[in-house]
Image 1: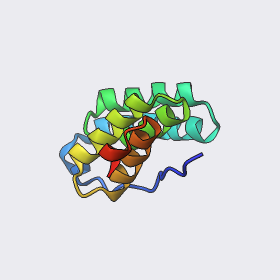
Image 2 (image 1 turned 180 degrees about the horizontal axis):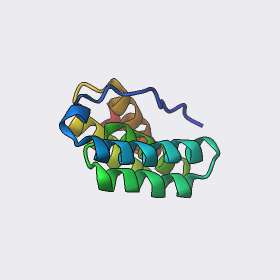
Image 3 (image 1 turned 90 degrees about the vertical axis):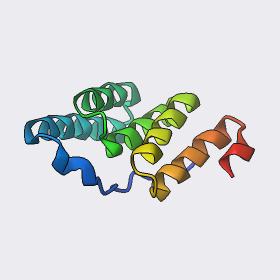
Image 4 (image 1 turned 90 degrees about the horizontal axis):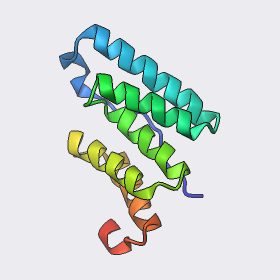
Amino acid sequence: MDSLSMAPIVDASATAVPTSAVGDAHTWKSLGSAQLAAGNFREAVANYEEALRIRPDFVEAYNELGIAWHHLGEWARAEACYGQVIRLMPPSALGYFNLGTALRKQGKSVAAC
């Protein structure tokens, strides 16, 4: 299996979001991370989606949601998540790496270059 990166992404937009919303979104993202680590990928997806419902610009939640979709073999969904990482944080090498992995899994090797 490909090695995907869950390295922390510095999220500069956190200060623009009300503290209560950030806390709730971070809680849901943390629950998703725990489910992801336990191999409960569907549960992780639900938690990440809730985090993103609360905070639609949460880059780390998009990245980890993409990883959960990757583990479920949902390559197009993973691709969409990694695209959001890049859209929200264009210099994200992590987003490009994970996007390239999802594209390659879909047979889109040329697009991954």
